[in-house]
Length: 503
Image 1 (cartoon, rainbow, N blue to C red):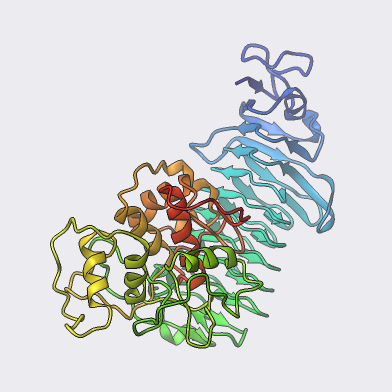
Image 2: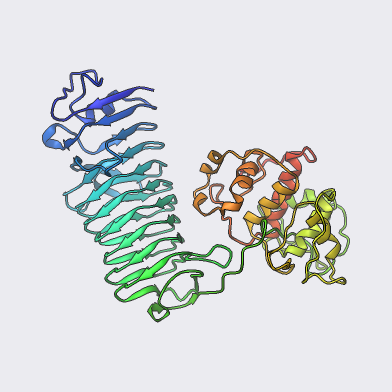
């Protein structure tokens, strides 16, 4: 791939852009660059005075790299130009990033009125190891269907916020520092980013979640903010931690509240370090369960008691418009899934581990390959004891360190995928396969290889957003039907289904 060099002090825009004959401006280098080009910046100031024309538009697949080691110190891009956003009208911005563009190791400042450092409009770029400072509004604005990776940056002394997300933007913010920068992070509309391992300190408020935004916050330090650590308003619903996937956030010394919920909707905030006296509004703080031995496991489709034998190919009264209809009906014809006495399937109902064991017994040949485990909470007369024992000995389902199976505990999506991959001894699992998921940061460590394997074999089915795995959410009967069917396809036991939700 081509590499172009830029030096604002010694370069010339009549030059070739080689290391010995660098361009003078980023603008010129961008005009010369094609997809796959890396543009390397020398120390200096890149501004209108040095010949730059703003906004700088970094095209698809182009990398602009300064000094990542020191977060762009000494490499300043300062300026502003007009940009008409399809979703947010006229804006004053410094840099516009296209799909797969990368901006690394620079400092960005926009001193214009309501100035934005980097604008991301419905694209999926990477912004890493940069410093955003003294922008008159925010450092980074992402909107539309943007899905950026915002990694290891410093946001300091921006007027309104470090990062603002709007539209249906997703993406990952990880290991950034937000300090004294208005609101650290401001989320609007239906944005759903993953916010992980950040330091959010000494801002007006740490994270402000508005509109219908549903971010996920994990392992952040949210400290010494003048007002709140996290504020939720309107119909926002941040996930600050669940029993299956604790938050791990640390809240300390925030001026008013660690967490303020002004929505009237209960917010889950399990497994965080916080001061209970600094909570305002409805929260579920919950109890974090112990970690299971190998891997917690799945749950399926029958009723809480042994399910009556279904009619092969039976039509269920409540799935005619359901996204998983085809998966469910094909499994029903194979006598793998069944419904309820009222002829419903209840596809959006969650599943217990015992129900899942019963489903596995119908879907697969559960040949024993492990020694039996005597679970102390599965009695001899428990309705699913036989199915649980078979699934356990076949390697699909494991128990917990305290020798319990917890048959009535719901199964998560990650556990279901791990169960299928482990039980069928599927191999593969390149970690790069996880890049398709906007919430990949929240895939539990025990599940990453299995999820990668399942992704490569087209077992994973995500509704309504193919890019969102939701690994810690309880799986539904419709979702497990889709996973089971795709597993049968992957093992040449069923014909493929054409579904837009197969990853």
